[in-house]
Amino acid sequence: MGKKTAVVTGGTRGIGAALVKAFLRSGWNVVYSGTSQETIDKSVAALGGQLPENKYAAFICEVSSEPDLIRLWDSAVGTFGSVDIWVNNAGTSSDQTPFHDLPTDVFTRIIDTNIKGLMLATHVAYNRMLKQGHGAIYNMEGLGSDGRRITGLTPYGTSKRAVRYFTDAFAAEVKDGPVIVGTISPGMVLTDLTMTQIRKNPENSKQLIRIYNILANEADTVAPFLVKRMIDNARNGAKISWLTNWKVIRRFLSAPFSKRDIVSKYL
Image (cartoon, rainbow, N blue to C red; front, side, top):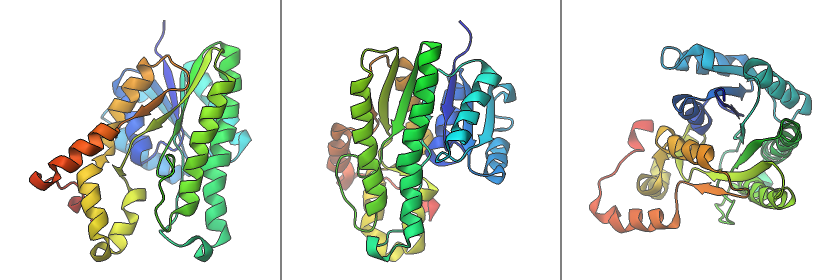
């Protein structure tokens, strides 16, 4: 059997870029997307010299556009022959702002990307995987997936709550088929998206910094764990989580004795 291929939407930065590297280091081919040529060029430059250039390809894709998603699939198949794992990672958020103060274009963009885009991508990938006779689709969870709320992040949390419902419901619908569907959850990851609020006002974010230093990890730490389990998993409806309840308890219990600081270098 030839080398397998993964597609990662939103793979130019953050946890998406880390997933791309982890798949490549696992010997897989990778196709990933970004929303502009600039972000793609930066990500390709960052990969240059680290990993074989014939193992990956990047394309512009707006995930809220079905034609773009179809082109991404066709580009992946045209480059590497098939798609074995498709990761719906692309997502966006907003500044921590009460919902009623947000411009409507800000929260509609979140819904268009995080819900509409993810559902469109799942529809595109699933139907084509069904024709090829195999495949796996994983949807990225995040803050709000389990019902937790943070003031000022209502649209983002709403979108991630929807991701969990959609994935669970769709996985139940396709449980007897050759294509599996599941979720991945990286927990708290230090990326540009998650650090925005702290950078803007670190003095008023002391409690958040404390929590991040206890619970958060860097994307390159979490991604290999998620990728290995995606590659190894054969169960429909799987929930692959980095930050389990046991890890949370253990981190908080050890916090008074730990000087763990992974946030300050990003401020």
